[in-house]
Image (cartoon, rainbow, N blue to C red; front, side, top):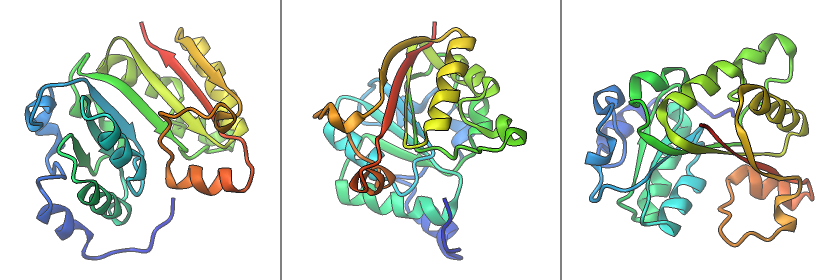
Length: 212
């Protein structure tokens, strides 16, 4: 995801500490203490401009949400989305998924969302894919036993690769959907990319896997 550089982004994140956790590693093992209530903890990796995480927080007030985004110039838009939603059950972190084990304790997260992640289509970039085995190992560590990962993408190649990667890693496939919007799932919250691609008639792929 490309975004125009915003030199004021870092200051903006600091100004909104009630939404953005600046020192995410300090919260390892105690994320639920940041929220009004201790509830299941869901994590979106690559939260982008925040439409999904804000929509989920509003639709599911009985769950606490964390949105992780690496690019400062993008996560500032997510801050605005969360403000508009006026939800107290969502926090944002400006972090890299490579650092998950420094940010979350073993078994701290209930569900992980990967929405329209970069497919990194070239073979030499395989290790950067968020469904590569090294990332799956991190997910298994921070997820509760039988915790779930939900993947949505418009990229058929990434989807097929991910299904194989999940299977080889020993994940249990709970759901595989080849055209999400044909199912008319009332609980589905669309991302900005999802709205764009589905409007063009592109199928949206979704799968749900569990980690034992």
